[in-house]
Image 1 (tube, each protein chain N blue to C red):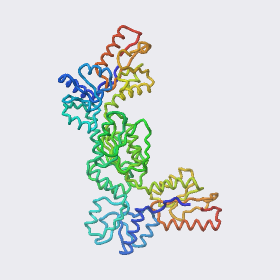
Image 2: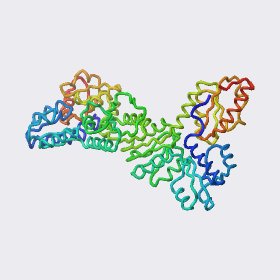
Image 3: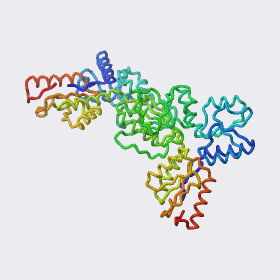
Image 4: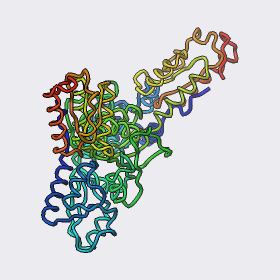
Length: 286
Length: 286
């Protein structure tokens, strides 16, 4: 049983397709930062000619550069343009929209608040694009502000945040702001995956979550599954499947993060099916 | 002991002063609707030459017309202007601002939501001024919307609403709106009075709330006082003071709604003081 939707979200699928096409055409593509939070997929892309660099200053002249789905701050894009590099822009359209809305708010004199993880490249790209005051508000901390009152506050969210968290922040700020403007820049893909795994967990004896240990959205899926009380196994690849874990479980659900490639999901699915048909350890996969 | 602030808020004081000046100059002034939710004050103003009418069509030609603090819809103002009447505009500046912000939102394509009582003249003036979709959201009902999603929603509040109620509405709408813009048009005067009576109730043996039975903000003060568990007496004038009520109470607190005139508060205060000095029923007023 699969939690649907699973695996690559629209933005990641689009970015990785562009990257693959570029690798196919140019043989070598430089990516600004790791293009996806999945070690197995990174290995595969490296074997096709991907080179990961940390900043535009590391880019050799006249090369092809890939911008990942998380986007980059405007000044980075500017400096890339100046180098004359071929730019393959994989920025997710939902991320671009969040960035654009934040810029609109800043331009119109709002104090910009970004709900998100300040260490996440998407949030950094948004906050660093803004000239003027920005507050990054972490979803994991209670919303307390030193300010007694705000004049004009504008809020956007990292695309992978949860609606309920945004509404709590909005509620809290609304008590202090003379004017509040909120762009709900949350992408439905994340909540759809989260809703799906919550529903699936209630219908199966165990859940396998497939995704990189460095993937925030995969971690969230695992957390949701664990919180339902359903036994949950978070794996990066088929090597991590534990035989003993299937003991006594009749139906197993599978979920995968937005950065988990289809080929990896299929590999694990095949491994499970063959184990099932061989009657290994007596578990069934539905 | 008084709950401070008490009595006329800024907007009502300003409106009634203009009305008194107009009565003094012109001898007769027509008011569109009852100018204040206080029967005693209305009697006094009538004795000075006030005539209350229900609509602009009742206004004789060439007369002086008074617009109360709650304001009127734009079309009413227009038709008054056409009659050539002398207009004394007592609209509270905070109410004007709420109306202006609602018009801005409507003009910029937002679905306008007004948090407030749909039967209150202030809310009617705002909602009837808007061409386009308007939803009046009652603070006393749970915030449920049939709509699955909203595009652009703009929220303003009746000036006498509570901050916490606005933040709950904002939170609820933010989960459904792609864009949300909120103008906090709540006037501090109401919450200051409410905070004051809540604090006072904890420090006295009984609370007297002075204000019209038809005054929403006085009713709210009485409700807050009753909810603290402190014995509460809501009166319109000194005739309603109940001797027996004071039995066993050492300190009495006094609060008054935003439409309660100072002269009425002073009259009641004098009545209490004289009763105290006469040792009537053994109660004390601090």
